[in-house]
Every structure is written in C-alpha cells, then in structure tokens.
Amino acid sequence: MPDPSASRFARSVLQVAPPGPRHWVGDGFDVHTVFWPQRDAAATSPFLLLDFGARRSFPPAKRRRGVGEHPHRGFETVTFVYEGEVEHRDSGGGGGTIGPGDIQWMTAGSGVVHEEFHSKAFTERGGDFEVIQLWVNLPARLKRTPPRYQPILDRELPRLRIGAAEVRLVAGSLAGRRGPARTHTPMLVFDGRFVEDGTATFDVPKGWNVLALAIEGELAAGADAAGVPPAHFARFDPSGDGPIVLAGRAGTRFLGLAGEPIREPVAAYGPFVMNTREELIQAFEDYQAGRMGHLAPREEG
Ligand code: MN
Image (cartoon, rainbow, N blue to C red; front, side, top):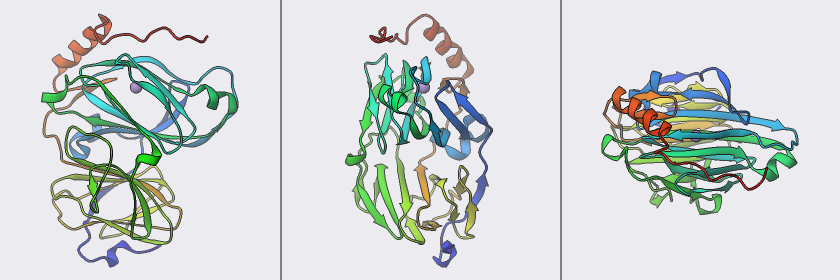
C-alpha cells in the first residue's frame, strides 16, 4: 500500500468510523448508513447523513423497486448513481432518470414530496446497482428556500488527474477547476478512483470538516496512513492546515466531502432536518396538511 505519510505535513485523521447497520430503504435501496445527524452532526457538518448502497445485483422484475411518496424539508438530498438507474419525481416539478455516473442534487428547502425508484428499464433488465445518497444541511436562513432540482450528468463533471487518482469534481473548486453543482454554503464534493498505486493530495481550507469515504478497496488516509475499509470513512482534523492525503491501490474508489461547518443546532427526525423541535413538529403538520404538495398520479400502472 502506498504510504500517504511520505507526504510531509499531511493532515491527521481524527477517526475512522465504521458504518451503521445495513437496512433497506423501501424495497429498492440496500444501504449502510455511514454517518447520521443523531450521532455525528457537529463532526460532519454541513453533511448530515450518508447512505451507502454497495454494489448488488437485482434480478429482472416487473414491478419497480424503490421508495414511494415521502416528504423532506430543511436540507438537500444528493444521489450519486454508480451503477443502475434511478428515477425521481417531486412535487416541485423536478424529476428525471439518472444513470451510471450521474448525480441529482435536490434542494428540499421549504418542503417537497418525492418518490425514488429504480427506472422502468433497469427494473426489467436487472443488473448491478450501486448508489450513494448524501444529505446536505441548509443554514437556518435557507431552510425555507424554494425547492430546486439539479440533474448533473457524468459528462458535465470536470475530470482532474490528481496524483495517482482520477477525480470527478461535483461541487466547489479544486486545482483551478469548478464543479457544476450549485451549493448554498461553501463546500467541496468530489469522487475518484486510483488509476495506479499511489497517493492523491487535496488542499482544503483550514476549519472545514473533511471526510473521505472508501467506496471500493481500502484507502490509507492522512499523516498516519489510517486504514479505511470499504463503507468506512476517515474524518480529518479540521484544525490542521496540512493537505488532505489519500493513498490506495489501482482501482480503489472514494468519495471526498469537505465543507464549512454550519454552526447551528440540528433537530433531525425522519425526513426532516430543522434547528428546533418546534420546527420539526411544524414540518409534520405542514406535510400532513398537504402544504408540501403532492405528486401527480402516475400514468402507468
Ligand atoms: Mn427521499
């Protein structure tokens, strides 16, 4: 394994965290929750939750698998499809099908109702499916921002060669390039794959929370070359000012998340993430009263 500590002044890793228990979201998404707000809010902010659906094969079927109509308020859901196809519809009028390499960045903001399914074509064909869903928090002043839907296609993502890794830049700036996602607070989101054994070095502002998730293969992270097995993540020292250094063998894949922390209370329950318990109760009432909208009936059966 290449040794990231060979890079002098590399930032240290505070923690390598294992994923939580595996569970199904609806009948379509077989995931580990890797981090979540009830446990990790301050340490991962502005990122709230990450569901990692490692690659699994689905046999062909007639009925679409997934999760039906449900609400969100107060944050954003970001879905990375690595294999398979996901189809989404929301009450804000957003929707579409995204395939391998594509990402959808949905701002729930003031509230949406949506559904998330395997696409019809993928359901009928079957095959490998691999997906990550990340929740990104919104600060109090933006929790009621209007809903927004950004489909981000694989071909729109800048590709950067950083050390031994090929990186796709989703949001923020890296090595003079900018990712296409529009975000509400400063952050850097990228994924990558080692194309040869070696290291990759990233400059991230001091004070930001920085996380590196191993998607496939084992990463070595930071000054002490901490081992990060698949579905685990490394959390770097936000007070350090050295670069973020990752190492891996050819084929190792990862997701990099860095952002300026939102230093506000987090009140999270089910599909809502607000600042106070009263706002959570309000969200449930607004959803039940239909104030987050509804999905139009589906055309097909
Ligand atoms: Mn959802």
